[in-house]
Image 1: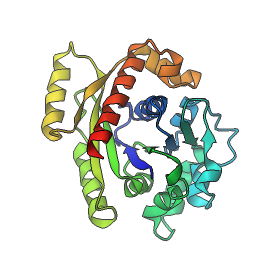
Image 2: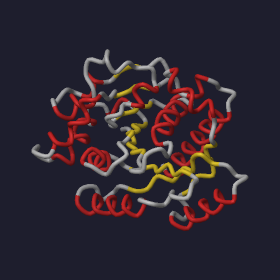
Image 3: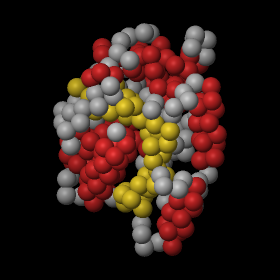
Image 4: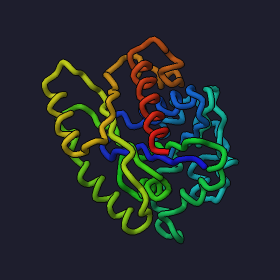
Length: 257
């Protein structure tokens, strides 16, 4: 059965979708069966895999609100071992519709049971907020992975995220744990970077990945070509960084199992 991991940070612009897209691709390239679920109304993971939001028959909105089976929403991508649950703009209104639904916090978990057996890993690209969709993601997940930007405001909002996770743990999902923290937009030449890294390590002892993700033009360009960076330019620093991270991620999984 798949391990389900939320890629989450309610602060926007920290490399959350970039991480969801590129970690999924790199883990798939290493031979694992991966499903990337785009549950962000912006749908950036969907377009990052070259899937046109206008042409999809069903989306994660239909899965959550209209009861369409996850297996009927899954789109095969052209990238090795990666399938996608695509998002579209309809998802933006889903939070309001979900409020009146029974067991609204577990709609996503219930939907994903349809495809759990088909994958090794399911990554959830969450919205940059702590609304009902993100709560659904945390209720459906075994663990959550937090990308953090190496900038001054990096730790702002993390206390709020951890408080939300504690509530989810108490009320709905007692077994959810922190998978790890990934440092993004990393520049080792800056004093500020080492200060942020020290703070993050203090905040999350033993949970910060050794791999870091640098600022990289190719990483920024790849989504507009509808490709993860390792397929867009496998010789780029961004591709090498996510390849290293995927290997570290899988080694950690092997140690824990």
